[in-house]
Length: 392
Ligand code: 3PG
Image 1 (cartoon, rainbow, N blue to C red):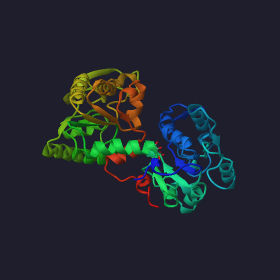
Image 2 (image 1 turned 135 degrees about the vertical axis):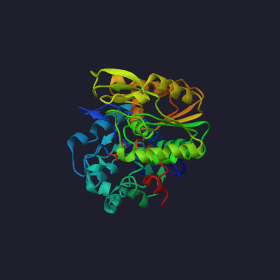
Image 3 (image 1 turned 180 degrees about the vertical axis):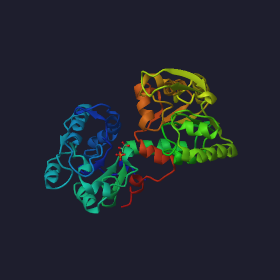
Image 4 (image 1 turned 45 degrees about the vertical axis):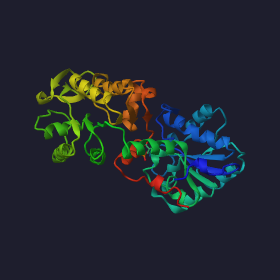
């Protein structure tokens, strides 16, 4: 695949798709990780003398204008981070935008309005893709976080312009790609989060590759049930118990060490005020729900992490948003931070948020900017936004 480094950029109008889908509160960006992650590409483009046209989605406005989802606050923050003016368009294509593009000098940056204000974006409408393409000479896709979406600004446009990957896109594909195709061993995957349903593909794919599979979070209790234990009021997907059993059998066949909680923190209520206690996994009381892995489990998981050369982590070990149930997720994050010999890949979404929350982000080897995208990548799926590059 061609990268932004392989094309001539001086004086060129570059349509650069980024993922500025950032959390906001009261018109302020509350987590700017994704904006920072796009800076190397934007700075590369401006340094090369390109006229930079940035495009992103924000939230899910479903094809119409939602005032709170305008990208204006993002333009402001980006401008501060870049240390230069960022122009902001109120539309994402059309005559008014063309006129603004015409005013750009080499090295200037323009941010278009939220591309999801138009119904054609998510439909991957070819007319909209062409309208985007008309603004520019080159297409750069740096939106790894949105690469699993086949939308007009992530996929369609690539069929109408020379299309290359940005530096963040390249780095994400490189790190995740190497991890899955040529992993250093022992290779451990930590899979957590609420639902088995959301992690079926990733467990299936990783069982073929890892030496150790660690299970935690709400989804663990379907496995616990599959092992023959009662789980009280813990999360349980009845219709996935057989599947959980088959995963455990598959692990055995493949010689993959399969780690499950041996103790848990149970609560009589899903709240910070709940009464809690630690119990062995076979002793979850019928009226209580397990909301975190227990101290013995944390120790076992930390040991496995410390003895791994590569760890991929996707999904928290408990309800880390509540202090009382954050200990397990924190223990895993700390073990990763302390394992100096271990390459740690944090697969976006909640695990990235957890690492951020515990102020351990700078001690991880790679934190993916993709939630859904990194999950689909780990499932072994092709990402449409990547496949479309270099089509022309
Ligand atoms: C994300 O936040 O995972 C990406 O920006 C994609 O957003 P979406 O799930 O709304 O398509």
